[in-house]
Length: 137
Image (cartoon, rainbow, N blue to C red):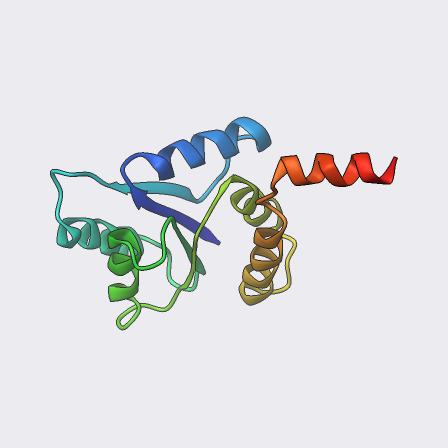
C-alpha cells in the first residue's frame, strides 16, 4: 500500500520525516506540499503523476492536512478518475498508526476506520487531565 501525504507547505514532509524518525524508514511513503508559488492545478498534476507511476493493483491512501483545504480539494478532484482512499485531518499519531498497521490490517477500509478511532484519542486537554488526576487522589 502506498501512502501519499499532502499538505499546505512543508507539513507533509515534516510529518513523513517525523514518522520515519520514530518508527524507521518507510517504503511507499511520499509527501507533497502546496506552496504559495504553486497553483492547486500544479499540485493536482504532481499527484496524478504519482498515481500513474503506482503499480497496477497497489492500493493508495492519501492523507491530507485540512478538510476543504486546497490540498484536500486537489486530492478529491482525482477521485473521479482514480480509485484510492483518502483521510483528512492527519496528525503524527494517526500517521504512525497507519504506517505501523498497514501491512497487518485485513483491508484498507479497516485501516481507515482504525485511523478514525485513533484520531479521537490524539487531542487531549492536559490541564483537564491533571485536574481529574488530582480529584482522584
